[in-house]
Image (cartoon, rainbow, N blue to C red; front, side):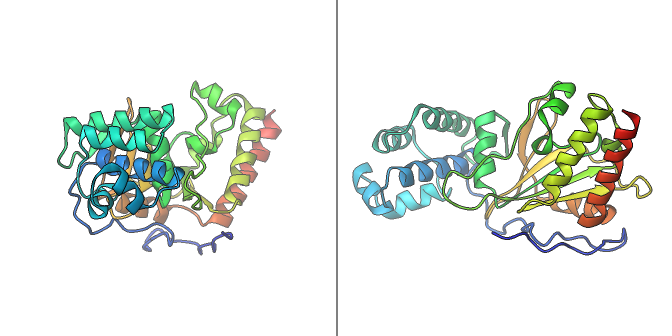
Length: 283
């Protein structure tokens, strides 16, 4: 996958649709986010076991159509179906834990629950299921672009982008941040200069885009979030303390608002490197 084309400068009054962010799907959400993710997890396990839908259906004693509907999140799973699938696919302990957590969540709200706790393994599944991921932070560098030193100074763990486990390309990642986050000397000026040069490296990497909102271009107050853009569903948005995941039909308009205020990629990268030099001069 080559480097995607850089967008031109966006003035605040212009619409700022990012060309690589899909619109929320128009398909009706008939099952919960937990059920949809459970279908993705069991599909991954079936593929890992080398079984076609037809072969797996024969072993599970269901029709291919029923298994296909389950895997695509069109019907909830029963406890028996999940147990039989995990046994048939000889799932490892991590996969069993993920599936069990999602099954329990499905049991609480089987018909269209739109939120759930942001457990680490569930977030990992969203990373691998997403077509694109958007991160916004008004006061700090977003989690996936943090160095270990920076994260330690914040008292937070680093959360690097998870690799895809199903052989497909990693999701496109859009990082939006306020220039205020670049000026804060988190961990000291030297550590901050190192962090910003790492962020600039992320900005020039394949499949990533970094956009900075300059201080002279205000935007409405929006709390930090990570949006996972999912196929045929509303994006799942991680936010809050403690963090929760919630499907949000309106997140795209918030992303558009932020992009309308942000500089283009080239200007953003130059600003990041210029502020990194400022931190070095203070060191």
